[in-house]
Length: 160
Image 1 (cartoon, rainbow, N blue to C red):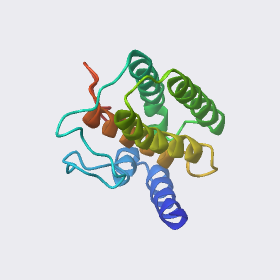
Image 2: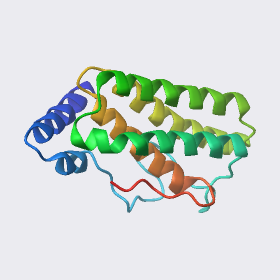
Image 3: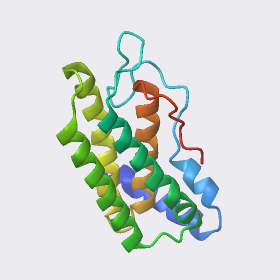
Image 4: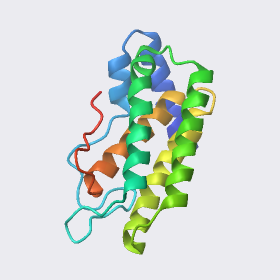
């Protein structure tokens, strides 16, 4: 995993430094035609999205808003280390609140923890020197997984 992260970071930094931020972001993009079970083990609830509750929807919306606000700087390569650290801190705060207030049935909760685990990995990666953009990409991917596996009325994937 560390080697993959290094390779992705190298590709991102090379492309960002050569003036190709959109291409760099695409290098860590994801497949929008995901099969029923993906690489993270996430599944649907008998072919349907899992239920959500108000605290979960609010927390995921807030994480998505924070990421969307940062994307222009991330794509341009101007997001600072301090901005990444602040973003990661906000994301961790929302995750802690969602976990404390969670009222999901056990099966849905288990699936949610897969998604939140991916968000946490992304936030931690954003705090590593040189891995920030790939951490943001992990969070975007996790938000996309959330939208495809959980019943959240009005959820729209981040376009980038």
